[in-house]
Image (cartoon, rainbow, N blue to C red):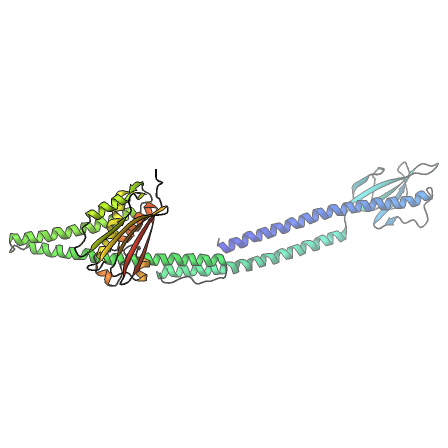
Amino acid sequence: MKFGKKIIFINSLIIAFLTAVIVVAAAVAGTRVLRSNIRNALIDTVSSRAAVISSGNGVVPDDFDYNVGGVYLSIYLSDGTLKNGSFPGELTLPIRKGVVSSVRIGGNAYYVYDFAIALEGREDIYLRGVVSASNDVWFAALVSFTVLAGALAAAGIVLNILSVRSAVKPIDKMRREVQEITNSKDLERRLSKVTSDKELARLADDYNYMLDSLEGMFRNHERFTSDVAHELRTPLTVILSESEFALQETQQVSEKDESLEVIYRQSKRLKAILDSLLEFTRFANQLKIDLKPVDISAVTAEFLGDYVFPKDIRCVSEIEENVTVLAEVTLYERILQNLTDNAVKYGKEGGSVLVGLKKVGETAVLTVRDDGMGMSKEAVSQAFNRFYREDASRSDRPGLGLGLSFVKEIVRLFGAKIGIESEQGVGTCVTVTFENVPPRS
């Protein structure tokens, strides 16, 4: 059953059930009130008419009315003999002084009330009142109320159907648009704002955001496929060419050795590319690692001391001593390696690379700055995306665009934060902020 029909069915059942409950409750309560009123009216009528007879010491006036407001009156002697009066049908009920009894006469329900009239010097006589336990006016009112309640319930069901259809209509439109996007495989399409309802509008925004993410993932995947193909094609082409050259019988041993050396270097390059991809995938899928206090001041200084900078690149270090954070030494060195490699790769000839480390309040801040070509605003916003490389002059540098993505994953595992500030023609500064600084002992 569709969602809208299910809602309509459930709401209709609720409306019908509540209507039935109200009708039954009104009928039961009304019947009780009606019967109580009939009984009270019977007692009042019999008592008032008995007072008339009692005032005449048993003499019944000639104009005595034996049917008052639907109450049948009759006079009985003390032995139960009917003296005068009328009542519907045949009634053989014995005298029951001061008691309202319920009897059935001719299939209909009646109330009977016997009132004793005390007479001076004579035996008491009894005035009996008989009245119908039902009321045609009440029955008509109950029927009218039931019909009215049924009409209101039907109107409620119709309004329920119309309101649910109106509420489900934008959902159906969203579903059709989603189906069209799925069938067309056009990830550039987005859901329209089909309703002013805040919840559905947020749902449409969330779905569009998901489509934006998917589109970005597919674009990165396409770029990655292209970059990997480009990176792998060159060494594979060289390996194939050198292999064909070396297999020729006319070549000398020295030439074959040169070809083997070329093949060896290109094979190492292929292995490095594949190792980088595998290592990135492993860390990207890792949720948690064991962190220990690490003196990153000493690790950074040792790393920069071993790093071989090009002759035309000057390294400037500003490292505060005894800066300790929760980290893992090897992965922290990978952060330094990737950031420094990028700074050297995109730095300018004769420029410098500044590596800084200091404590700022309860945090530790690592900065790697170059004075090279810089990055555009778009490149800065996408720099941490996997396989992203700017299409301008930076793209002629070797690599797959995994360096900063790799750093971001390591920073995530450290519980730290990373940011980039860059200006084209001025340089780039990458900042890593460690918030998990252990207290000093």
